[in-house]
Amino acid sequence: MDPDMEDKTLELMCSLPRSVWLGCSSVAESLCALRCLQSLPSSRAHNQSMMVMESQNNTGDVSPKKTTVFKFGNGSVAGSRKRMSQGSFEKEKDLCIQLFDQWSESDQVEFVEHLIARMCHYQHGHINSYLKPMLQRDFITALPAQGLDHIAENILSFLDARSLCSAELVCREWQRVISDGMLWKKLIERMVRTDPLWKGLSERHQWEKYLFKNRTNEVPPNSYYHSLYPKIIQDIETIEANWRCGRHNLQRIQCRSENSKGVYCLQYDDDKIISGLRDNSIKIWDKQSLECLKVLTGHTGSVLCLQYDDRVIVTGSSDSTVRVWDVVSGEVLNTLIHHNEAVLHLRFWNGLMVTCSKDRSIAVWDMASATDISLRRVLVGHRAAVNVVDFDDKYIVSASGDRTIKVWSTSTCEFVRTLNGHKRGIACLQYRDRLVVSGSSDNTIRLWDIECGACLRVLEGHEELVRCIRFDNKRIVSGAYDGKIKVWDLQAALDPRAPASTLCLRTLVEHSGRVFRLQFDEFQIISSSHDDTILIWDFLNVSTNGQPERRSPSRTYTYVSR
Figure 1 (cartoon, helix red, strand yellow):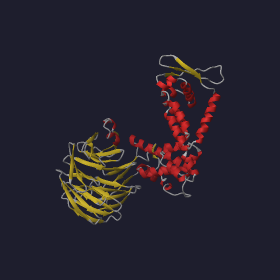
Figure 2 (figure 1 turned 90 degrees about the vertical axis):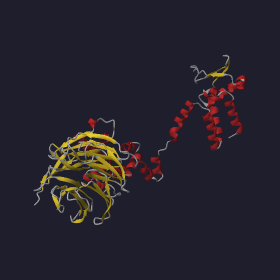
Figure 3 (figure 1 turned 135 degrees about the vertical axis):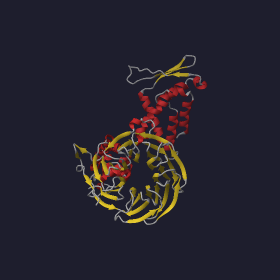
Figure 4 (figure 1 turned 45 degrees about the horizontal axis):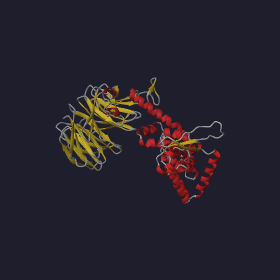
């Protein structure tokens, strides 16, 4: 930049109060005002004047004129000068542009920075509005032009469904990138990976076969996934409405035997239901046909608890033993004799097993394999039968007829704290993350923060002992000796502002006896009872006008032992 020119410009701008030249609407007008003030030595020398700019439009002129009047502190008018004609402004503007073009880029930036620093706020706003669209770039359109389609696809793949719909409407190029990148397919795949409800729907409605595959002739076009997405959302909304309204398709398994009555425990997966009965047997049922596939015998007392995985079934009985069975053949692999009285509950996971008993003790076992199980530690502290245990890699949680919940360290087996609040013995609980949910013979359900031991909420509604309880991210489902199953809103229960009257979503009444055990997922509840039945409450395939939408009418099978 020419030093003389820069110095001259800055000298003109700095030779008077900033309020004078900031009132001008353009750089050219500022220069005109400065030239007028140069002819007034007093204003330039002493900085004691004020300037008032008055603009009037002269309707007689072809181009608008602006008259600038300078008034000093004593009120006298020092002088005035009309704004130069449009032609003069154009000449001066062209001259400035020519000089500006001769400077280097760094000099141009420096000059503009000086110029902007001398402008007022509203001028900055005009400049910002002018620059903003110039700085915007359509990178989604630009990237494919550079052979970087995969980057554009990757950026858009992070959008949710609503944003992806909006992106398709931006322009044809954006729509092409979304279509070629199969982004609706990727969105559905992401939901299936992270949400159990989506995964379950994909398996049940058989559109899972179109996911997680590379581009082949078997994969439908992007439009298929675009139309599939709203159908999935509609299915989810229907399922949620069915849960809230209690709409379900009911199936019943009769488990009667000649000498005893009652199904004390169960667990299920997509293929089978395994149940433990009062008649000392374990029965395995086909979940589709509801027929009994196998009966396992060996216990000499009622089967009170069980858990299985893809290799073994582990059962606990009133005969005080724990037995390990091969899940395929039904052969007994191991028998553990430790407790002095009935084994009331057990859990195993990740090489560790915990059992509890009517003898008031908790046994912690190292479970290397089905045949290699060794006792690690016995936990003593409860003053009555220990009815239920649960654990993860941080805590073991136990509940007893002594009205307390005790927390122990999983790694060291040392006692941590006691949760007090129930007024009578505790029959059931589940523990996950920081939350413990327990059910008691005081007919209430309590929610606890395991880290601080605080009771977060008390749920009331059952009329007798709460015998079984499970929860997921949305709901708590409880069963009681009153024969009722209640569905509770977990998120509302954790909100202290939620009224107690809004917490119970639905009460399900079909069992004619005490509800002993239940398990549920996003689509169904499976429960067992003293009435010797297993009920399947299906919230996905709900009957319409008495006919199921996707499966045959409710079936009842009776198994009679021989």
